[in-house]
Length: 559
Ligand SMILES: [Zn+2]
Image (tube, rainbow, N blue to C red):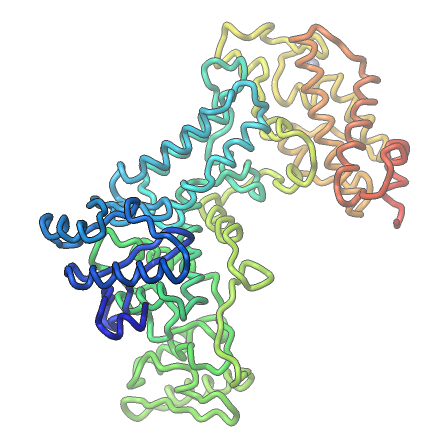
């Protein structure tokens, strides 16, 4: 193809100031050819395709092909289409499932995404799914097409909240709930698990993280055609890496939205100095805890040339060469500043044979990960965290425990407020047949529950005073079974299982009219805690029967 272009038989188009040539895009079995709107060029292209078909044995299906014009009259276009016996179609063109030439700021552009998500969420008999099942369903609703769109286009706020709402409604549409109760604010639910949520993430933040991936790839794929086209059209910083140039024109251009993510993205990229040719001495943050231009602002004001690379200014081998070029003679105070600059760089380390590179600060490998970027974005927007997130997720307890821990199960006093008709016996706890039922009562202060907590603390040889509320209970870390990984894990699991068992018992008594004794409950807590624990890595290889018999021994043993 390139050889053909050089002979002028076909041309493609040229992008930007470097006149980067783009003649075809090809992925899997979809190909786009770009050509001048001239009969001659298209006839040449047709011949090339026919020859290619003969040589390779691949058949090109012209009937499935379409032709689209850019600033081309309808008549000319129909005439050109007749060369290929193909249809004339209209923008946007769908390529790999994405509309090219559409306007991502319009609501209609996002219809396929919203439709896909809502179809997926509605396609299931949600009411028969457990909370855990619904969580999985929601997590899977953002696959394929929606992720595709979100990874290339900036989602308008109204669409983002529409997607969030679809997921939210779906989460709380459990059996027998009739009218939907949203038990916990979406803000909390959508947090990553590490921050005490269920990990769906806000659509708008997921979008930013996905767009950020292009900025990372932009740093790494500098020989790719897409990198050349972007650089040719929009330019980069003189260091050749950073893409935070202001894209003023063309509101439709996806790169504009991506370039705007740079502000969120760049704090997590660090520079690794090799030969110093790809890092700007003054403007990039490559040494110490801030950029040279802000640390030595007095000097920066009087240098004559900006945007110089590290190797331009100080060379990349020892002794350093110091090519600073000031606009006028330095005052005494500036000379002091210069001295301090020089001495601060005395321990800088170069590897002249290596290119400069950039690393992602949020992962140990130094490579960008979507998850880490998304997590840090979510942290910024969720500054207040009160729940012991690790506590909740390091165990294998069922997801309803998560509701319990957030104090958000429908106890009688809550039901009474929401739906007076549904509450069975207001002001009455079915476990102790007295007092009012509230989260704190049922999980902490009810005599039946207190009995169970005492048994758990006795087992760990600890005295226990009941805290005021359930949040306090979960925040305090009791070293009940020792400081080992096993001890901590098992203790957490036991606490969650206790909460879970109490809740089960309460429901069984109300809805099934079945009652278990405190002793039976305690046996179940011991059994299920051991079972959940044996599923975790720390207890691998220990038979359930052994674990169940003596927690303390298993947790303190070295093996
Ligand atoms: Zn009670």
